Amino acid sequence: NAGVTQTPKFQVLKTGQSMTLQCAQDMNHNSMYWYRQDPGMGLRLIYYSASEGTTDKGEVPNGYNVSRLNKREFSLRLESAAPSQTSVYFCASSEQGGQPQHFGDGTRLSIL
Amino acid sequence: GENVEQHPSTLSVQEGDSAVIKCTYSDSASNYFPWYKQELGKRPQLIIDIRSNVGEKKDQRIAVTLNKTAKHFSLHITETQPEDSAVYFCAARGGTASKLTFGTGTRLQVTL
Image 1 (cartoon, rainbow over the protein chains, first blue to last red):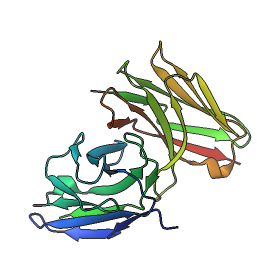
Image 2 (image 1 turned 120 degrees about the vertical axis):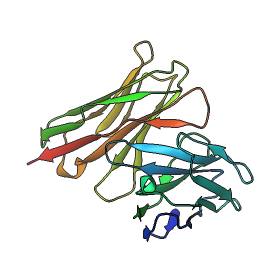
Image 3 (image 1 turned 60 degrees about the horizontal axis):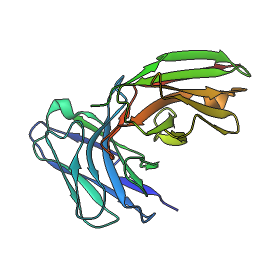
């Protein structure tokens, strides 16, 4: 009954460091998403995966890469973190594309 | 691309009153309009959605209406309760099938 699980929940990085945010879902959903949420700006799509083996850019993909490792897992990588990437990151999944149904608890990322 | 505007940004109502949140969208090809509720520090939760071939949808105390001609849709909450206090986000899925654009959110406060 886990739904969408994200790790870690909190992370502090220094500018230039790299890290990978992990996301896994246990609902056998085809589509998975990564969003970032900044104050006053709603959620913005970073990357999307319609199915295993496919990924597509969203609104704000610069500075990020993703991997759809298998149907369950969709990871987000920051290669060289910048202060502008300080945000709360949410992973989501859905059966059909373009309609995220279930979100994870989020990762609060601070870059100094 | 799609642009979604949401009003008001904050809304305070007394318990038992109704609350209405309005959104407009720009892409006439948009075909899917979900609403999400996000409690403080928690994940967004999909609470109701409507597709472009339907004018209204209800689920207990919440309802959504869609006016395709005017390109706007609204969330109606009746008999509000303190547990309705949260930030509500509207979203619209534009002509590109997988890209959902979010509004900037409405902070609803239900006072006793």
